[in-house]
Length: 173
Image 1 (spheres, rainbow, N blue to C red):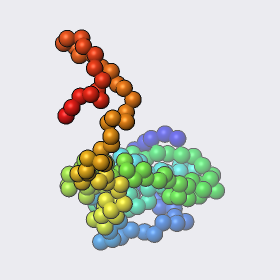
Image 2: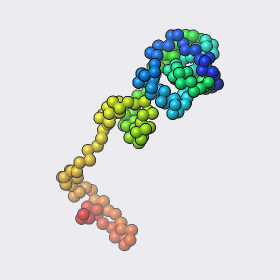
Image 3: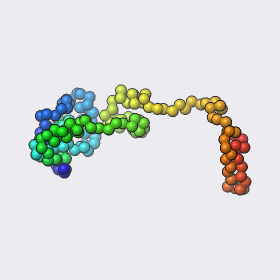
Image 4: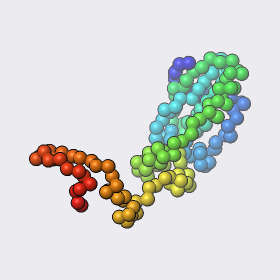
């Protein structure tokens, strides 16, 4: 496998591609278009020099061709027999990880509204993530909720100024 520049016009979609073709106006098409316009091709499509087929990245290539902004793009070039190519095509579309929803929610919370649009999540998906997030209850509690400090083991500390040692349990608030 290696990376090389190829003309978009030379990237022939595989006839067997199992993905539904995206068309302008479809939500996923528009998200992909926005991502390409903002970030370019940071995830190169995969081309099989043995068969001349595009193996992965069909949707990105379709959007790029329709945008007309690129003559050439970088592609990852493989040399596989057709049966392995087909297996790779399925694997590229099927095998993926799961979200750590706490980390994902934290990341999404750090983004501005403009950058949230670039993530590919729509408003409904974002609302579901926020609803499912484990948000701690920050309501004030009673004194009883705080625990009884007299039940703690002795904790002696030394004053850095005078050197006197005292038990933290004896300190009054």
